[in-house]
Every structure is written in structure tokens, then in C-alpha cells.
Length: 96
Image (cartoon, rainbow, N blue to C red; front, side, top):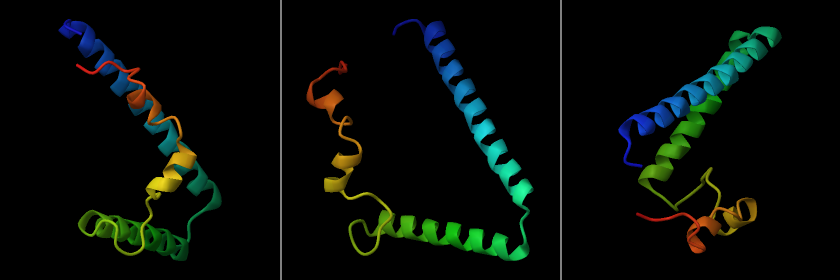
């Protein structure tokens, strides 16, 4: 695309729609938590799970392929997402 105005409009639309979707998703989580009510214990448990997941992801960043991981191994990723490689293998998407 050579038209900067068109590119800006498309990018702006994408950002606006993604922002709206994110807002709706987070509002739904907030309403769920307000509905069930959070005790101090449940806050600590949720925070501990989030910290543990974050530490495992940091471990994957520094020591990829060693130890426990939350990422899907490559052989199994083909089972869950078989169409991912189709676009690049068949060269459906133009490469500029």
C-alpha cells in the first residue's frame, strides 16, 4: 500500500477494534469477579498462579527447551494449528 492515509485509517481501525474487544473482555472478567466476590485468600491464590506462570515464562526466555514449560511442543502444535504453515508453504501470501 502506497497511500499513507489509507494505511493510517486501516491501522487506526484495527487499534480501535482491538481496544474495544480488550475493554469488553476485561469488563466481563471484572463483572465475574464482582459477582463471585473475592476474599483475601482467593486474591493470594490468583496472584501466586500468575507469578508462577510468569516465572516459568521467564525461565523459557532464558533457558529455552530445558525443564518444565507452558509452551506447546512443536510436534503437538501441528495437531492444534494445522493451518498455520499453509499460508507460507503454499505461498498464498505475497512476500515483498
